[in-house]
Amino acid sequence: MPHALVVDDDHDSAATLRSLIAGEQFTVAVAHNLRDARRQISLQQPDIMLLDLRLPDGNGMDLLADPKLVANSEVVLCTGHANLETSIQALRLGAADYLIKPVNLKQLQGVLSRIMKPAALQAEVEDLTANLAESGHFGHLWGRSAPMQRIYQQISRVAGTSVSVFITGESGTGKEVVAQTVHDLSRRRKRPFLAVNCGAISPNLIESEIFGHEKGSFTGAERQHQGFFERASGGTLFLDEITEMPLELQVKLLRVLETGRFMRVGSTTSQETDVRIIAATNRPPYQAVAQGKLREDLLYRLNIFPIDLPPLRDRAADVPLLANHFLAAISEQEGAARRFTPAAIAALVEYPWPGNVRELRNAVQRAYVMAQDEFIDESWLPGAEGIAQMSGWGALGGLQEAVQPRTAPAVSAPPLPAPSLPAPVAAAADAVPHVTLPIGTSVAEAERVLMLATLRHFNHHKERTAAALGISLKTLYNRLKEYAAESQSGDAK
Image (tube, rainbow, N blue to C red):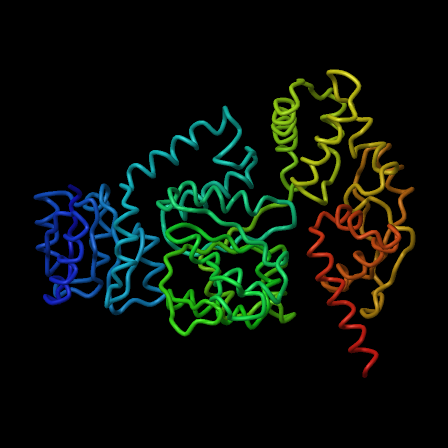
């Protein structure tokens, strides 16, 4: 039977915890101070330790500071004095989770069901890291570049804890893949991983989809419906494009994160939830707060452990590895092996990939289909000659006119030195229509100008516009709706 140690100076609380844990088929020892805790650990190493913060002879974190004592024990902070700062500090020192007194039985059962020795988790991470040089991947992520090495270090640190993770990065950089890797390296791996694109659900239905609804709660609610929080119980809920979530629903999400409870639409009874939240956005978070797209208090609650993914252009050394990985996958799927020529690899490396990894994967699939034989050359890749020929490839897909933003007057400044490009690439780039923006234009305004100009270029064909910009169709629709509302507001004034 697994063994638990309860370290708590409150005799009544310790007795209650001992009874609850024993009911889950554990042997249980109790210590009321640090000295007794060290003695109990020397007698029998616990599989899990429920540790109070305030003890008569010191702070509970003193045990966490001694790795020899807790190296083979999962430590759960269990206190009535916890706040976000102390909880994060404990998690950084190696605590796997934290519970607030009075301890909720369902949450305690969830923690006990996920016991995994820290040494086992660490060995798994070390194995992935050791094989990285040979295999080229870490979990579901591919790449050996320095920026990706940093991402792997962050994932290794946070996966074994229960803290919320906030992933930022451009569209197509692999935010969902990072979330999946965090889940697969966590203690929740045996429970569900659910991914929700907050921008792909109708604003009228998103609350019902996330929290569920009762039968008859609104027109069309013919049966009770379990939301994502219930379906992901014990596992991980990935909220992608969190800035597309309506503000009134963000308030309810914040409440769930703070209390661990939620209510279905149409219900008057709250339910407990045991879900780890990983959120993501392709907008700069603080810019989203300034624009009223994200509540500031929700940002602080989600942003406990931020991970910022680099765009593919900042890790060009990974492009050949990624391209060959995608090519191997499609070759296996289609039953015919193909490979890139050296010129094709060079073209892939030179291209800036505004749509990031997603665009690269789509480019490889297209090139595979168009290849005449075993070898894939640069003819059907968005490379040196393909930039000017193929509309729809990334941000260089072509804009017919130069557009000036509505605000931000032009700034007189010496021209910046042009980047050094290979002659064919430079000639192709010169032939492509472009957008001209003055220095000092805000990122939001630049995005608006580029998006509307691209839409006009593709004759208001929204699917091609979204593909060219490297964003989802839902994101494009949401932005266009915002711009229309801003235009109407301006006209009303």
